[in-house]
Image (cartoon, rainbow, N blue to C red; front, top):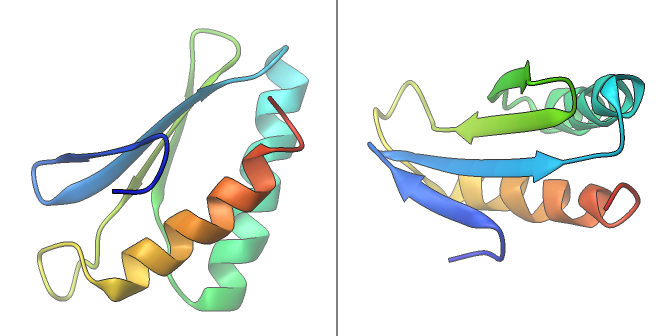
Length: 83
């Protein structure tokens, strides 16, 4: 399993806490750019002011696939800029 990610209900889930709400939005926007480039779109939630939860699953397969792990690796690289 990738660092920071957990498997929950046939999905990969990543939780991160950043410094404030604006940074959470900035992080989500960066994740969106990476996801769009990969043509793979996770569920993203900003909650409790500065917490972000990303849930990745290949919807067409109904489970986690290599595409999800590739996206998770790319998101991990982004995370280093924020935490």
